[in-house]
Image (cartoon, rainbow, N blue to C red; front, side, top):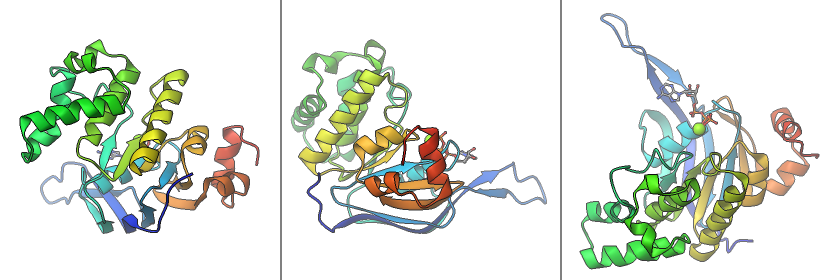
Length: 252
Ligand SMILES: Nc1ncnc2c1ncn2[C@@H]1O[C@H](COP(=O)(O)OP(=O)(O)OP(=O)(O)O)[C@@H](O)[C@H]1O
Ligand SMILES: [Mg+2]
């Protein structure tokens, strides 16, 4: 399925993450709430790795720690590639409603400041094409796009910086089934064409099965099981994985 070699892009070792709780009033120290607990795993170049687990298990928290959105953690996050880019469940919320698509696509490279205006524009149109959108979409505002088109714009924006690792946090959960299938096909095409590694977060076991080589099962901040998707689904060893498979109506 993939042109996989053994090059590691991301290595997470004993990662624990914390949120501050409360105001830390005078004479009382702020409480720390631990979410991720001693998590270790790695992702190789060209791999599509699923992260599944029930709501509140800490999947988004883990993704935010890896991408540096949150920094309150212990343990090690070692990256052997450029900064991973992230796409989210709600493409509308992650796009600036006041800006046209072209502006959104150009912004990451404009901030970097290393490329000419003409090069940035050329790349923006190339990325639109890569995600299957017509050129005229560049002149639209997010409110003038469908949910599927918005998610394609978010993917194009993420690709502008040529990431080697994409973290997709429930990227199809808010879309209807037909559009879900289109976005999954697009992500798999980008994975093949660019040898892009993807950490694909979902609570939908069927989507993980379609997308991923390997999956991590997360419960209550811990990875309770990890393995090749085919093995994991046919021979789950952890009771929680069996429970998830049963709940999804997948016979083992
Ligand atoms: N900013 C925050 N401050 C405090 N606690 C938080 C914060 N964000 C998330 N949490 C808590 O951390 C835990 C894990 O949340 P997280 O969003 O990572 O779960 P998730 O697995 O992504 O869930 P879902 O499938 O619903 O997206 C939850 O108990 C949540 O309430
Ligand atoms: Mg989440």
